[in-house]
Amino acid sequence: MDVELNETQVLVQKTARDYATRVIAPQAAEIDEKECFPREILRGLAELGLMAINVPHELGGSGAGVVAAALALQEIARACASTAVMMSVANMVGEAIARFGTDAQRQEHCSRLASGEYAMGSFALSEPDAGSDPGGMRTTARRDGDHWVIDGAKQWITGGTYAGVYIVWARTSPPETGARGISCFLVPGGAKGLKVGRPEDKMGIRGSDTVPLEFDGCRVPESALLGQENGGFKIAMMALDGGRIGISSQAIGVARAALAESVAYAKDRHTFGVPIAQHQAIQWKLADMHTQIEAAQLLSMRAAWLKENGKPFAREASISKLFASEMAVRVCNEAVQIHGGYGYTREYAAERHLRDARVTMIYEGTSEIQRLVIARTVLG
Ligand code: CAA
Image (tube, rainbow, N blue to C red; front, side):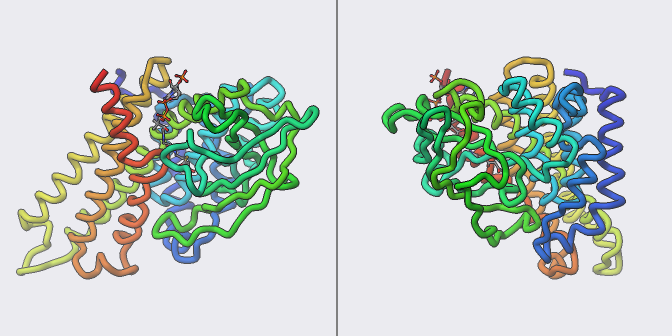
């Protein structure tokens, strides 16, 4: 694995950092407080080529690769985790269409996602009764002439209110076929028979839009099938392998923000006549936080590098996501502790970081699912 970043990766990282510092960070507390969907920020990210970083140039993406995407996501998450999750999901959706789509599907959707013409692209896999076990989904798609008709409910759909395109998974064979009877479809935003529900009132990432979807006789043409009929489950798994690198980047970015704010606070706040940074109790916390972030960074870069170089990376993505998400919760919790009573108030960002970090242990596969994936490879 190359530890040194190449010119493109440095440029993408710097571009994301500048935008995050200049435009996103000053708005992050308000985005959280008012639960505002950052439409203009996402448009700005698209203008900078950050909504389709690993989508090839010829489809309108940046073609900058997986490592660059991970680095950019970290920078955005450092400023605003709500924005970062939407950027991560939009990138995952664009990549999945670029990889598994027909020429017509790629032409129709990839450049619109990349350019920001679509405010979002959504990944509609989970259901009210099927999150960790998507093979148990109940949404169906049945053929009707040269169309498919989708019926059912989806849950926890990031950006679902604003999506220009949804990748929707539905059962196309009887329930007993499990994971082998699922297909996926590209459903345009505003499709007839698709109802978007009320956004969830969440603990963290409050600026990100998370909604349920209802499909009631939603008709899409045959050409909306993404990949092979009954081959949708594997597309979901492969897309999520990559998405998990995105979530680990989000977690690392949030943890870096919590550490930076803890360092600043520790230098400023005095107890017993000295800045608290001079107390060994605080120094050890900061050292542990930094060490854990560096370990997560290496795991994430390894997974991204393997993916970028066409090597198997599913296990490494799960390891990276498991470690980074649990690390972020620990680090953000310590950041609150370092801030003392102030850390428990909205006056400082530490409490927001802790709330934002918590979901990284849940979405795109819970910590328990990551352990299941890893254990399967350990057991052989
Ligand atoms: N890549 C390619 N193929 C894969 C794969 C992978 N990573 N993982 C499994 N498969 C294949 C298997 O080889 C198998 O293929 P065959 O039919 O040819 O044998 C098929 O898929 C079924 O695999 P399993 O029997 O292993 O499936 P399973 O039902 O036991 O599930 C699981 C495995 C890993 C637990 C999976 O269900 C899983 O990842 N669950 C978590 C789901 C998840 O992460 N949801 C997140 C929701 S999206 C989200 O959060 C986005 C957002 O908006 C933020």
